[in-house]
Image 1 (tube, rainbow, N blue to C red):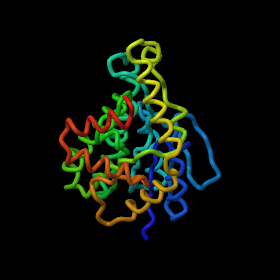
Image 2: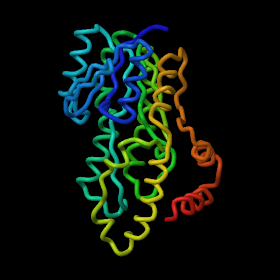
Image 3: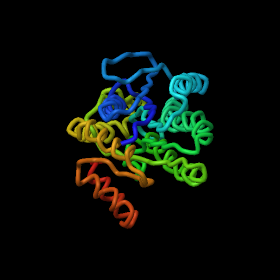
Amino acid sequence: MQHKIILVTGASSGFGKAISEQLVKEGHIVYGTSRKLVTFDNGCKMLQMDVTDRMSINNAILQIIEEQKQIDVVINNAGMGIGGSVELATKEEIALQMNTNFGGTVNVCSCVLPYMRRQRTGLIINTSSIGGVFGIPYQGFYSASKFAIEGYSEALSLETYQFGVRVVMVEPGDFSTGFTGNRKISVATQNDPDYQASFARVLKNIEHDETNGGKPEYLAKQIAKIVASKRPRLRYVITPNFTQKLSVLLSKIMCGRHFQAMLRKFYNV
């Protein structure tokens, strides 16, 4: 296997940490990033980087280029979630959600692509979600950020193919990570007499599925296979849960009205 120079954003915990550790085990040179500088004794070199700040991103990428002369793979994993009604979301909440998940992915891609175009080779893996395939109640702007990543990645894949750069989207299902505990909650939704009871039921179901979801190491191993693939696909649904895999398929083939009814029942909206 050819060992590669790999950048993983959001590598201080959860998916990013597991992905970095798996790739190091397979002999790759891995740089991880986090907003606050942390260090681990796992073979991954951590850099301080904020995906919403292009100067911060450029500095981190320049350090990698100076040390390694190239970047072969970028894994855009950094992200966050806000739970609440789409109606009651504040401008600040919307901006935070979209600027981190979608804007962060765009920023990193825009900063690394000049180097990949010059190399005439590269692999970009953007983290979407099954919530980027269909909208999830009370996770509306999280879903919107992932839908945006899907459309952006499709266009990016078409534009960069001519330069030897491949773009992949991974669509994880529910996994047990720190994402659940770090989710920001809309106070307005919690206090709204029309939404509060429904929100509490749905959030309880979502958190149950996440807490009892797959281990991040499962996803990390799938990512490693994509990195090693000579001809990666555009999309990968990644979950050990058969029901979630089936839900993605049904979202594509069912009548929209019937699929929405199924989701309302599943989430107990």
